[in-house]
Image 1 (cartoon, rainbow, N blue to C red):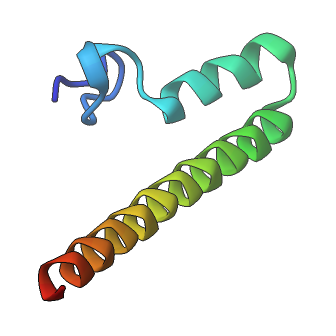
Image 2: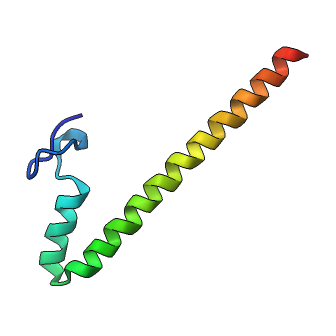
Length: 70
């Protein structure tokens, strides 16, 4: 993974990371609090998405294990 152009944190394609974009957005709209709440929401969505993929993988593994016992 490449690095954020602004803070050097890992970021896909070397684009600005979510935290740097949030800081910039807060400055542009003049409301850093709203931008910070947006980032929190965004990060929770990412966590939820990752959890869904973990659950799907478990279901697939269980289904495959059940087929091998037949």
